[in-house]
Length: 340
Ligand code: UD1
Image (cartoon, rainbow, N blue to C red; front, side, top):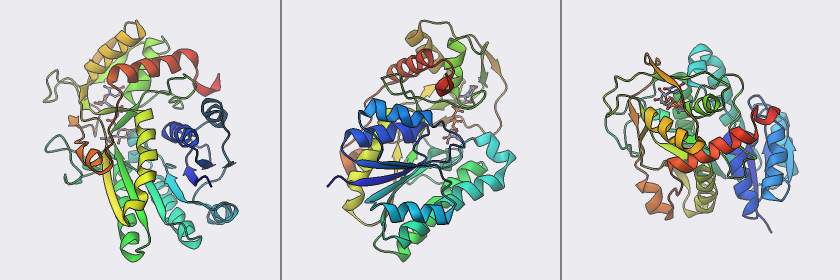
């Protein structure tokens, strides 16, 4: 019998790539997504790329307890992957209560439904942003948390809630994956990042500059204590993130309780490294100008990915050039994202 997995936020950037990965490995996949920041067209693309359809799709908000309970009643889930959440740092400062409501409230509603229906296995989408202003890089899972914005605080709060739930319910097995900076796209060019409006994050912004849709990149500060003065991040290919989730599912049964892992490459790249790599991948000039620092930004965030390597014998395989090449292919084939 194939295992059935519920993926919340399955139409989103990381969710859609994870659905493909699961379908290609024989899982039955059920998606819940309210499309507040995703396109239903991504769901058609998932089936096309994977060569097999999703088992079911529900256009509901995870906080709708009655609707969510009926989804659990209609399927027998072996595990849940919870992506559905808001993730824009700047927006979270503007509308913090919505972030707590959606990210924290969504997680507690999901936990309640899992409990009600006897589902005990969860992979949770966490974030390296919980580390905040890193005092030492690379960051291990034991590095102190110090979130600097409401978005990051919702992720840390969710981890703490899950930890409390695991202490109370010994049958629970939860893996929280703290992703660093997921970028890139599926190599087919059919799935990728399709932010609504002007992108907040650097990679989709650079892609639109390369395509001529935006005039130039603003590089947010070149006075950080880094070799070229621009911010350093651990960019991770979204297909590696998807593989990480499939691997996590396979290890949920190893032990019960709450475990957290970094999902990163261990390689840091500056904004200017990224600009150079994207220029090389696309064959286009990327005009940029140095502007002031963006409030809330930190100098450097790089993962120590060794814990996951030890636990699962797993590591990322795709480098920055591959991330840029795949992001550019998606941009070229889908100039206006899924809206085209
Ligand atoms: C942030 C969050 C991360 C979240 C992600 C997605 C933090 C520390 N990190 O990542 O958890 O998952 O957003 O929303 O809160 N940059 C420019 N010009 C731009 C855009 C970005 O120079 O137009 C620079 C930034 O200053 C930074 C780097 O590019 O140094 C990456 O920025 P971005 O892609 O927005 O991701 P983070 O802020 O690292």
